[in-house]
Length: 131
Image (tube, rainbow, N blue to C red; front, top):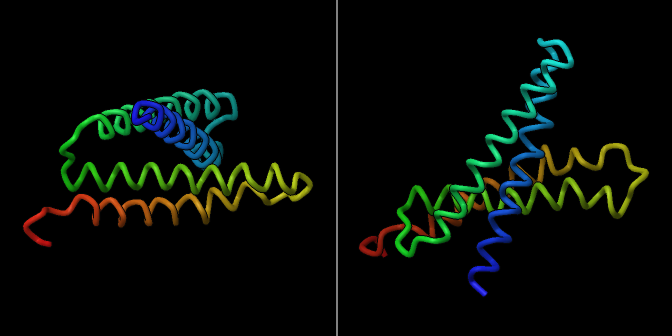
């Protein structure tokens, strides 16, 4: 069961990171670069970011003794990915005619999930001597 959770968490973090970096980076880069070049650049950067996020989550969930920094980043990536996915895809599923649905995940639930996951990771990963 732990292996299945590890695979699902890694996939979720990688996919959410890909979409977030692609749409946010594409919006920023397309302001200064031609459209075709912006598309290639944001696609490459989003795939790289997704790979790095997935690799980090995979390694962090595989190690028994994670440090405080690894706990913070893993918690932030996982909960941020869940919040982003719920806010991005939820409105598309439940209210497809709403034109501002995906912005909920990009601007509200994703960043708030990222912060909440980081705080939760800090609480989980704090040293035992401080308790």
